[in-house]
Amino acid sequence: SQPAPPSAGMVSTVGNEVERNKAVMRRWVEEAHQKRNLAVIDEIYAPDYRGHLSNGESIDKEQGRKMELAFQADFPRHT
Image (tube, rainbow, N blue to C red; front, side, top):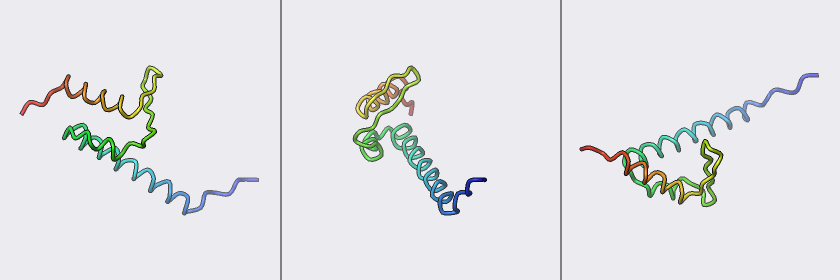
């Protein structure tokens, strides 16, 4: 027998979560990366945040903040 298809409510919930995640990512790019407002990190990162780098290393929120600061130092704005 075939499993029951997901309910419309489940699909809607997943779709809403995807849109919410997109909005958080847009906010990160606009605020932290483009405007260089790192205060947004405390608003959007969970206190126990763990990021995972391509080399397998994991970082916490403060290490992520330091990485963004290093990026900003390496690529200063030219106004």
